[in-house]
Image 1 (cartoon, rainbow, N blue to C red):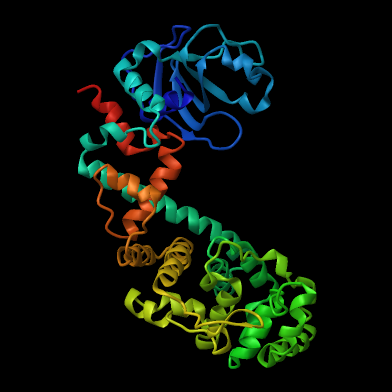
Image 2 (spheres, one colour; image 1 turned 60 degrees about the vertical axis):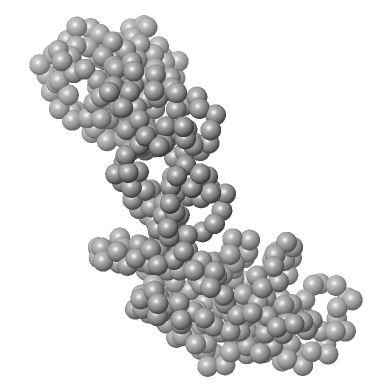
Length: 435
């Protein structure tokens, strides 16, 4: 057994509460279970109990055995002085507080449905990545849909929380934050971090001063990225020097970087990844597309927040400048380079627009933006990957990105770590053991 099971029993009060007594024989009434504590200290805080006719307010600590209290040295830890009840599976030894008085203890072993414990252990010991895979078909559709809704909201809130750190750093500047979040997503995982560092070292206000000239935007972005000079190898210098357009960008960057004192924040070529990327995903091409987007739209925030899905997808169908339509890397001409494609646009909506809408809904208390975020996901075709094929193998129909994002969250953060007790599907199977 794991302590998680005892947390589950205490939180939802899934045990026999008739004639509750502490192991010292005192009557016990549970007024308020308390709040799960995710930081250091006791497992539950803000609990309220009546023990032996006296009301107590404080913390509740949970262990498999009462002796774990001493094994974990809680008797010497001031953070546990406020514990008013020790909840255990087995009371194997008496426990004392730091002042020498007995610690009120509740033993659950004889008050718990052992069928539930058995079912929980079946899930826990299952070798499948999805612990309930062989029981999944027996779960009601309502339970499945309810958990998918929960998982999706959790995923969206987690993404929004990460963006909130940028918003705070940017002193609540939504335009700058939108620019940085979009920049990071233009890196498409492999180059997301250098893209973010680039945007943080090259403020949007600088780019907007040159928005009317896409060449100057390219000079600033590609120059600040350290990608206007190709690989740092002498063998390429001759070909680069013969490239008139590239020579112009290099001169523009030297002037503008000196004007705005950008040199200290410039990235180097070796900070970017090109290996095992399709040429259309090279950072040079993505930066040229990013420049074209800023050139076309003065406010990225308004672009994302003031358009519906159909309108936004049309506006994001942009092409980079003529030079970068025939170059994947600086100074080396090639066949036609595509613009921002459908899958890239959907990626931007899923990983940039949707989290920003959720963050805005939370920060401003305007829940309609949360509805818009989920509405965007319902319009996007589901991803196709190993995780989703696994769910489809269990009979689930993955219709759109709403479903796929929820199932990715469920798989990664509930199934893989076997947090069945935090999943309504898992809980329903455990409780079903009683039927």
